[in-house]
Length: 82
Image 1: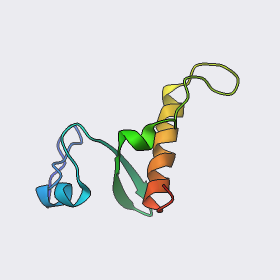
Image 2: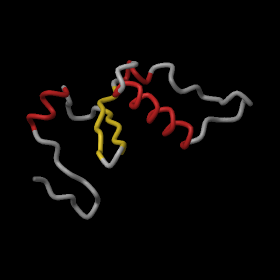
Image 3: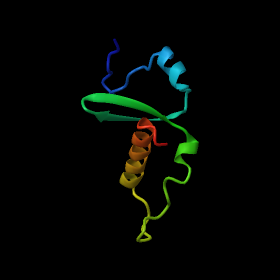
């Protein structure tokens, strides 16, 4: 059992890191589905080309757009589509 800190942080057990191939500095996406928290490793290869600097109207991409793209990428990877 792990305790969530005041900053909402938790230590990922070494055995889980080993199974997922997680290393310090890796990017992960955490999302909730059906009351279960899922942790998905996102590699720089997965992110390449997934976020354009401008949206279709030519306006700069917002932080929300980036978060949405990352979440979609993680969900697709979780479903085995990526």
